[in-house]
Image (cartoon, rainbow, N blue to C red):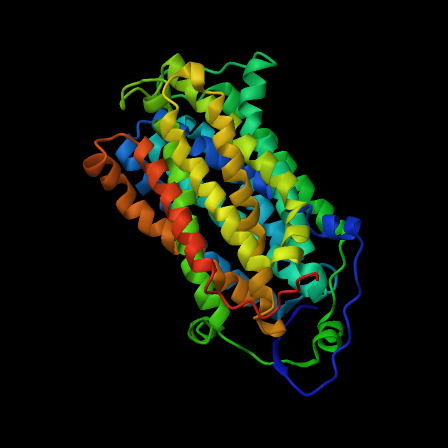
Amino acid sequence: MDKQHQAQTAALEPMDKPRLSFADILNMSFGFLGIQMGFALQNANASRILQNFGANVEELSWFWLVAPVTGMIVQPIIGHYSDRTWNRRLGRRRPYFLAGAVMAAIGLILMPNASAFAAYLPALWVGAGMLMVMDASFNIAMEPFRALVADKLPTDQRTLGFSAQTLLIGVGAVLGSWLPYVLANWFGVAATAEEGIVPYNVILSFFIGAIILVGSIVWTVIRTREYSPEEQARYTGEVEIVESKGLLDIFTDFSKMPKTMRQLGFVQFFSWFALFSMWVFTTPALAQHVWGLAPNDRSSAAFNEAANYVGVIFGVYNLVSAIFALMLPVIAGRIGRKRTHAICLIIGGLGLMSVLLITSPEMKWLLNLSMIGVGIAWASILAMPYAILAGAIPAHKMGVYMGIFNFFITFPQIVNGIIGGPIVAYLYGNQAIWALFSAGVALLFAALFVIRVEDKDDIITP
């Protein structure tokens, strides 16, 4: 039988959590591979899909708003309930993995096929609706994975745990980013379609992504055991007391968030403002600035070539991220987590700014060099803030605070979603390349704010 509980602290002597093998740590986060494969398919292709359905460049950020808005709402709620739910078979976090996987798979299958519903609703609105379903579902599945690492691992393994997640995120994102290009160029799957229709290589990629998403999360559910509330109490020194709590307590927890979390909020704001710009505007930026196309070109062979190449370079930054994630624990152990994160953000910022120098299809290979810097920053963004945060959060509120921390990811995306389109239209003259350059500048600001963060739990190797 499920029970809902609220943990309260008491004076107990905590026990050390068992150390886990690297294989166990990978199994614990393996579902992230599928989540990120779906997320990468969304990031690399959502703008081109919406443009296929008729969206203008300056409208893209508004359609993308559904993603961070749903994340802002969903993640704290999921964190709140996953802290308080215990299922004898599935545990505390795993029920949410499964529910999110099934819903995300449905969104992945339906979004590129939105034109099939054109007789009932405009394909553009169906596509935007499926974008919302996908992102809400990714958030349902993703948030408990962050909390699970903190639940299961001792302090000195948490950087490794979040770095392992980054490794799997990178592998999944490479698969998702490259799949449309590989299907088109290696297997001859159609990469162009009539106006208003998504090319078949993209449709097939989303279907494959849905299958891998569900399969990888099922693997984590089968291969990972969660600690019961009683075991968690022994490891944290906190007594679990059954007590009914309401959703309004999320606002109380928000107002009482730890100081470290508030400081990280500024870092996250500029980091995710930059990432949102990159995901939304890279396709039109490359189509215009590198391929030399007009802003209203959204279905030509050259546009689809540019859009497919976005998947290639996004795969590169995610591949770099997966490899660099293995180095993060070593680097952070030598120079500290704050300094590591600041350096990585600076490298990423310079990488994004360098895209401005690439001005023709013959130079497109240089975009992969720019993405190396982005990949280094992405690896750190996915690991360092969470490793820093985990040491500042009460153990019995790990899920809800990891969910609330998502506010500092979604809020900057919402701000960007509201103002990004008008800025591109009226300040940048519909030249989306300047949105990428500004994103690089934002990463430099994020690096400045890292320095003032208080990391109570940092362990530096002498």
